[in-house]
Amino acid sequence: MVFAHGFGCDQTMWRLVAPEFERDHTVVLFDHVGSGRSDLSAYDPEKYGSLEGYAGDIVEICRELELCDVVLVAHSVASMMAVLAFAQAPELFGALVLIGPSPRYVDDGDYVGGFSRTDIAGLLDALDSNHLGWSADMAPVIMGNRDRPELAEELTNSFCRTAPDIARQFARVTFLSDNRADLPGVAVPTLILQCSADAIAPDAVGEYVHRNIPGSELVRLSATGHVPQLSAPEETTAAIRAFLDR
Image (cartoon, rainbow, N blue to C red; front, top):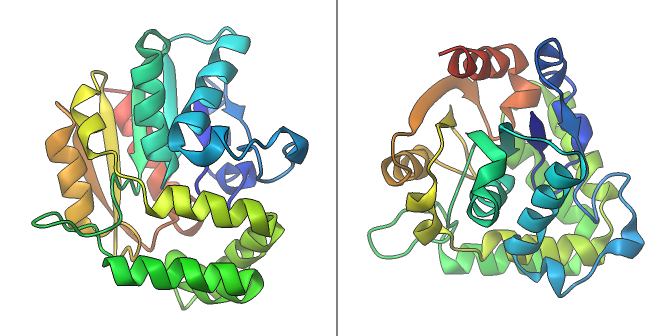
């Protein structure tokens, strides 16, 4: 099992979920280049100017470690990296688990992504002008669970550890991406985990992903917010385990 974290996070976000699967899987955790404890000198703005670059890293990790029949568990924007990684090397992957996926964040005609173009422009402008302030403002929105401020604090700190210039580019790559056309190409069992009251990937987005990935399974968690691996690790773990045990 390979666990891929989302924007502004790192591999520690999986610490409450990943250990459950070590008893029957080889578990691989990593930090995207530019995040966590990765080698910042490896960051290439051109390569990481699209999600394809990040997806290529996932494929490279799997090949370097000689993994096969991989269950790729991906959170948030990493869900689309997972979809692209499968397209690049379908022989490597046996299943996908997509937590809070969104193929496009900007509304487009009948498609509901959850944000207007103006919303995204304002979000990116705020990040450009004040990385730390943006992190402090956005983390509670993304995390939800306002009755548990310690969760938002952890996410804020994670955002703040990301180098500002890398965070700005990663945010643009994330929030301006459109991977809707890539969904029908997924041809392995796929679990979609949808939280309630998710400000980043609302319910309509989860339904869209489910409709467009053939044979996928959509599970609506009781968990609220966008980071259930922190806010509801037991429920998240149980849903993944139930999917794998079928």
